[in-house]
Image 1 (cartoon, helix red, strand yellow):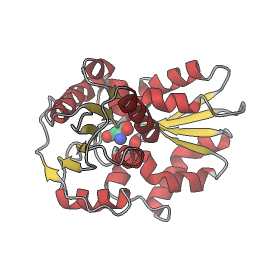
Image 2: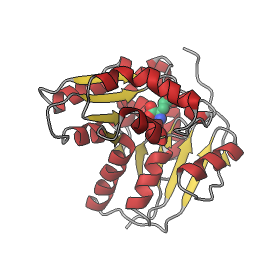
Image 3: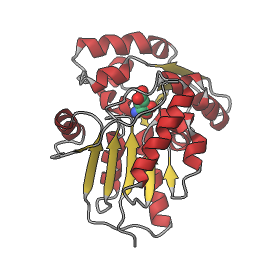
Image 4: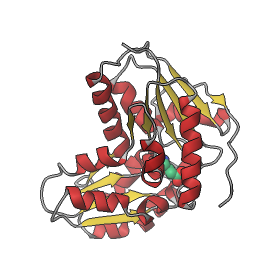
Length: 269
Ligand code: DGL
């Protein structure tokens, strides 16, 4: 038994989709969530800068004496694998878990993945999906408009700013007749309704956040470190008032009261 919290972090609001999934699976675990909303988005930045920011974020989360870490960010998972691998605690990113779920999608229709520019540029999702789903066509698309829209709270499936952006980004995906779409950026689960409304109910959406939460549950249970009293602590480098309101809505009515930490400085290169 280990009552220390599980650390979960992301560049902003997106990782809350992993918090929600993990809390449903493990109601008694303690959680510390860090959302770097003061520096979001990461997805258009150079890889080296993302690696530096990932190291800073991980160090911040480790300073809360956590027992395990969910890296609830596709961009960090694929841009900084070496930084994450160096962590000595049980750590789960969103790449392997999401790809594993996609490999179970039946049929021969193409499979899609959407993620940030940095994630798609490095090819990590496409390569991992091609290896795990041999013979299946893989279509990958970067959606750089989505994270800024979500962070500025354009999340409703009725919001024309969002629905136009979804249509612009996902038209080729719709035309290709995919069977399933991996949400390789954790923010995208927040706009799952708008994505589903555009693609149609036949396309299965697979949330990398939910897959990572399941993987962490399995690791905690198999290593005998479950324990806690169901507390969740939120840390944000953005405005606490808006974070609290948005996080409460994403989590389905929680009363979130976050703590502020100043955005960390990083070399602009
Ligand atoms: N939630 C992050 C991800 O999964 C968003 C990245 C960003 O800040 O652009 O990739």
